[in-house]
Length: 281
Length: 260
Image (cartoon, rainbow over all chains, first blue to last red; front, side):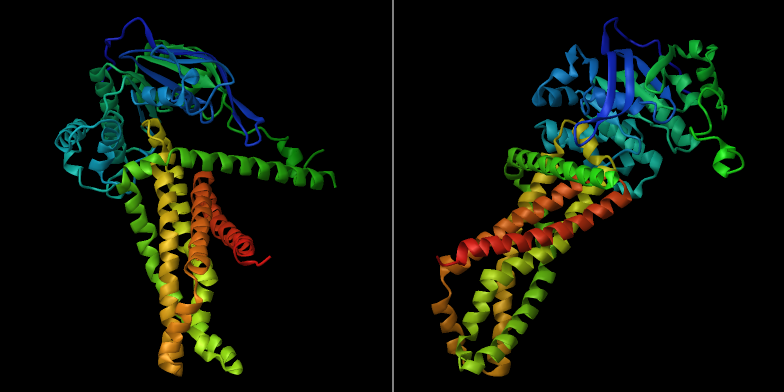
């Protein structure tokens, strides 16, 4: 099982999110439900940070904010000293080319082979000759253990393999920030262990700041350096894995123990049950 | 009653917002079209997919439309002793109207739906978001090549439809019914004006190509990323494209062929 590295992190945070509030705007410009409220977090180079919380708590939105896909109504999102939302389109794309993102189900291009998927960012952003692209792709695929699967199409690989191909694609340009959106969802124990190991080792070897969005407590606590807990769009707890394990906070305790009821209710808010059934007024 | 009025208001605001979004996407599509021509391979692949794979339905439909035109045209013309003008009638009908319009309608059903479904499913599978996160614009890399492939393919397919249609009219009129071979071709040659008829027909098919392909890419890009959302978007592509093609055809015909 992989263990958290002491990491080669520098003191200067690579990612700084400060006082961020966000609600998705509707087509007509009005704001929808509040997703994030006053979120602050930092990630240093070489550090692996987990964002944990229930579904709909705003974890993935934070990744979207970091990638500049959505804009906060308040607060700032700084990556490598640049305010993501003050950048021009060209500057944002230049910044994104230094980011890698692993999507929940891989998001591989289904009309391209495994090889072409990994080669995609290299072809789009470099003028490398074909022989160099081939070598780089094979190296990335070798790192995730799938050099032998280069000719397969995404439809021919398992969910766990697709996740690893997507990981190879995400690190193709040696990013300085790697984001993982639910990398363990739906994986069998072997694939899960392999993916967790890769996330730990690849991030450390690249010296990249890594952010992992997950609700897999068991696996994450073993590989991450720091954890932020989100509930209803707010950071309710943070700390190292040991601090989180020792936390007495009811929300964190419920999350770690997986208790069906607690601060996070089992029942979606609803009128009184008896009234709903017509048994009382 | 209040809810009814609110519903109308919401519908109106949503429609205007969607039109604005569509106009903005159209502008971005043009702005990011450079890649489609500097990396011509992207567009050629789509022309092959959109154009070549539509050939069968276009050719077969064109042939049968030509058969029907030949048959109906002969029945009408022979009442006035003008069956020699069959070639002219078939050619004018095809290059001015039926070629561009029927091709556009078939194109919407065959290629438009596949463009919408493909882009919609790419969106649902987060492939477009992944592309954006790799600092690659999906508008430049996915939408624009498909858009230009449609715009380029449409006049070529319409020309193919008209050519095969004329051949169909020839088979029925000359080979089966016995209209004079020379009269069939010479009347067509004398009566069809290169600019007035063929040129305007080509302009129509280019306009239809822009309209149908833009609707297809827009609906795919704007679709809800769910199976139901993609299904609805695909349906909207066919319905909107067909109505827009018929509406545009009326306007273009009025502009091109009305005599003041």
